[in-house]
Image (cartoon, rainbow, N blue to C red):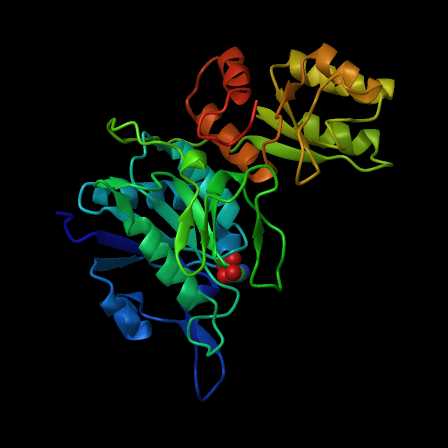
Length: 342
Ligand code: ASP
């Protein structure tokens, strides 16, 4: 017999938990302790649902590594008590948070489902209500007493994504997220159809939570006409340990000598250059075109089909381990949490 699932809903802030003041029309946060009051139908689930609210709540544009560490701690402290976790989060940086949690929570054997909304919960046409209901059902779903989705994912507009594969691509539509290089893990229709073969399998090992992140990184996005001054200014930042080089197409960049020399000098100074494509779908293939041959020769590291969001998270996580630079370079090219296809 299956026992009643217990779920912890963690509210970090964002549009989803807002309600419109009927008099002033201004948005202010709902008391998430009153989740059942906001969505009475939740009572019809045979689940035990508790909630935890951050104080202060934040717009996710204010997200930062300290908040991520606190969020991971809340999951850690409650891990044994609950079958699954739903994180209510602003959409703006949800993909970054999903990505970093996937790295910080090693041996995750329970669902951590992030969701949010484009319209506040307190507004009639909200998309938040369905997003929360679907996320709770997914966080509670088990087969043979084993969680069906034991990974960090994003549930939005009837789709379930691997979190570290997503980008926010639309600020207007209910369909706010895409996962250009990995299929959806489930589709929510009349039934929730899980694609079991695409979902990570539980390993039944003890959860290990990493709580040190190193944000000495930068993103250098290429554009035609980028100047030597801009490139050099970024590559010579004091304390810099890694740069995500956002390249064109399958990992291509200008072949100008000044540009390659600047990268080569940075690599010689032990700065990791991580090649991530500006395209939302497809993979970096170093050496495919003449315009990436030099990058490969000087030791630029391929990010394959990783998203920029996930690359940021993976670098902060790996640099936080304080391992030798060669180890970090090796691990950047291996899929640790299903974040890339190598
Ligand atoms: N700016 C908001 C946030 O990301 C938007 C949202 O909630 O979706 O927190």
